[in-house]
Amino acid sequence: MAKWTPTHEAPEPLEGPIVPTIIGGTILWFVLFLVQLPFYGWFDDHGHLWWLWTCLAGAGLGLIGIWYVRGRDAALKRAAEASAATAAE
Image (cartoon, rainbow, N blue to C red):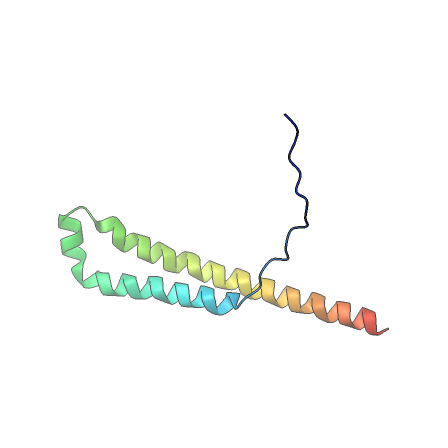
C-alpha cells in the first residue's frame, strides 16, 4: 500500500476577528452562569448542578483565552511591522 501524499499545497489559515470572538464567547458563558444561578436549588435537586459549574468554568477558561489571543494578536502585529521595516530597508 503506497503512502498517500497530497498533490497541492495546504491553504493559508483563515484569520478572522479572533479577539472579539473569544470575548463574546466568554461573555456568553458568564451570562449563562448568571441566568442559571437563581435556579441553584432546582439544579441541585435534579442532579444537574454540573450545568452551573460548566458555565462558570467556560467563563474562567475564556478569560485565559482572552489573555492568550490578545498576546498572540500583538505578537502577529509586531512580526508584521518588523517584516515591513526589514523590507523597507
